[in-house]
Each structure stands twice: as C-alpha cells, then as structure tokens.
Length: 101
Image 1 (cartoon, helix red, strand yellow):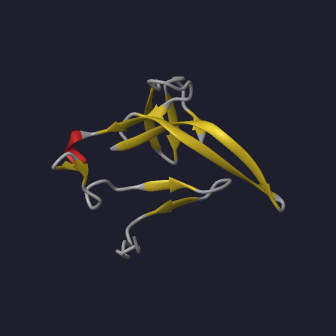
Image 2 (cartoon, rainbow, N blue to C red):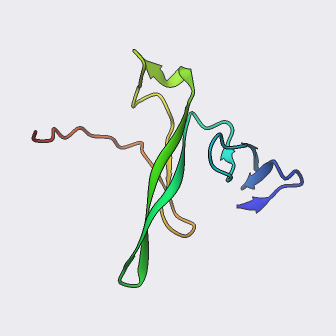
C-alpha cells in the first residue's frame, strides 16, 4: 500500500482508492468494496515461524447491489482476500462442496 496525497486515500498501482471510517473499529476500509468486514482481534496463535490471527466480525458493510433475497449472491462481488505479507487471493475459481451435517 502506497500513501496517496490525501490521508483518506491509498494508491494501489496507478489506482487511487478512497477510504471510509469504520463503524466500530478504528482502521479504515476501502469505500468501493462491495463487502467489508470490521473485525476485532480475538486471538493470536504462534504456529511455527508464523502467527495466526483470529478475528471476531463486529460489523459488516454490504452493498445492496450484491444481495439476492437478502443474502450475498456469491457470484456478484469481485472478491479479493488478504493473505500474508504482500499476497492477496482472488476468487474467480469457485466450486461447491456439500458439507456433512
């Protein structure tokens, strides 16, 4: 993440993203995100040379454009997830797997 001239923005490559204040937590969120979860740290677990952070969702921002029958339409948002360091994941390849009860 590269700082932009305005503290309510950040630069991702050549794109400037606007930030919005969180409703519950202090860190900002990307304003244009279809879905954004605000989390508070629940636990920190050391796993070998890495650390696993568990969070509790305390607020969800959901754009109505991605809802169908008051549920998130899994095909509607163009999702990106944060992994570790500078790594992110996109979810273009989706599959369904029924879970046993």
